[in-house]
Image (cartoon, rainbow, N blue to C red; front, top):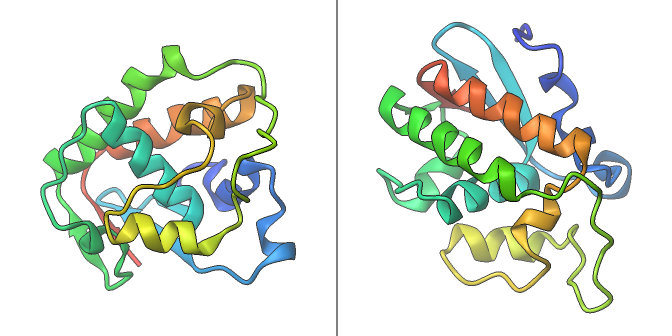
Length: 155
């Protein structure tokens, strides 16, 4: 895949967790109708969708549809709605990096991703704190713009 956005090749890096080095995790590779790609770790993609839901995105499909990596298409309307919800969250995301809570679950906990995929509650720090800080906030802005540019396939 060729990257249409300079940032998206290292999208998992914006989470600042060195995910690739610590855990062998699956990725979510998205390709939009303009041929631009975006790569997320499953954990980052999961949390971006959680944030979108918190800010009004209503899924058109069952949750597992968004995670199957089968080349399924998130249509233009649904993708735009994800982007719109993410943009509406920006004012509430702290500009400064939030410190991890002592009681927060480890964000590397892949069991949490699985819980979300099954529609269960997730019990770690606020989703707004997950994306706090200038770089992560910019990444959400970039991903929202990507979503609003049209439909995308999930691989």
